[in-house]
Image (tube, rainbow, N blue to C red; front, side):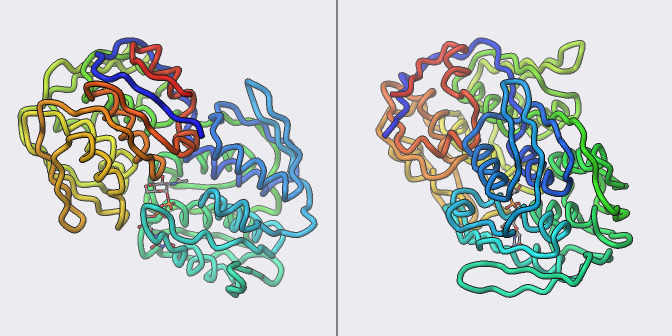
Length: 420
Ligand code: UD1
């Protein structure tokens, strides 16, 4: 089993190129099922999650060519529209093939994703909304089987909660539906806008991109095209929090101004973090030299709030500080798996329901720890970089799901980190 070993306590300094967004790449890859034409995608991050989605597409008769610069995909008619348990259990985002398969083939059999380390994560909203478009669902032997007579019907859909995945599934389905679909209370995460822009680039007609109301005029077919996936704001946020934890100065490149503004905004209550935007607005310099002094209260929320995907990393970074930090997790019910591991490294964290209180310490100590999910793993990386002595992180396959070249990127910023 591979491990990561970190010799902590180094100040960070250097430049990191931010990769393409995982949470944008996965739905966009699923959306290639909507067209029979050639699609060329750039800036797809080389992650195990991207490979899992590509394997799933191949199992559905897509022909895929991967090069360093781009991925070319041509989706053929599948023998059976089945996303098997073996592929879906590895990655919940596999459930995003449901909408495209129903839209194009009027049938889909997709394994139920089940719970995961961060919570139950039901799919009721996906199914309720697709039912409004004429789909009949049956749950059998651990699979969701969806059928529709002919084409999906355009519908007016008010989402009970702005679920990211459900918005994506309905949006994709609606592009080939008969008539117009309006999605109200849609999620507005930037990755959804990226998906909508991609769909428009291959012939869809979507209006209201970036707003809570999306209007989609169904088309008879979608065409081919080229698209470059947006940068990963969670990866960028993770490196910002590494600077907050370790101190130092790094430049994050390959960003865009909207993401830069969002990142500066979510960290605005931490006055010790300083930001400088490059003239061309694609690079963000992050500087932090002092420990945080003022007590902090942060609540995770849907976009544009503080992302739940950065909660664990924030907790690690704040575990060395001169203040108390209160973090409330409002999106997932069980997203505190990293806490016990951080405590083993000397952090002072107490949990009460969905709240965590972190009392800043002067130092953390290196330890052998276990990664439990993707973002929990990156919080342990940050803690290891901050701690005195050696930290060994086990089960690092979680990190490979969401961070491209993490060890290389951090090493280039003076961190002592290696994979063995
Ligand atoms: C996506 C992201 C994930 C991020 C999350 C919240 C991808 C591949 N993953 O996950 O990294 O942490 O958004 O920003 O983009 N819910 C229901 N019923 C449903 C759907 C969701 O109750 O049918 C609940 C979930 O259990 C969870 C909350 O809604 O508590 C948010 O889930 P959702 O927005 O759907 O997140 P995902 O799309 O799973």
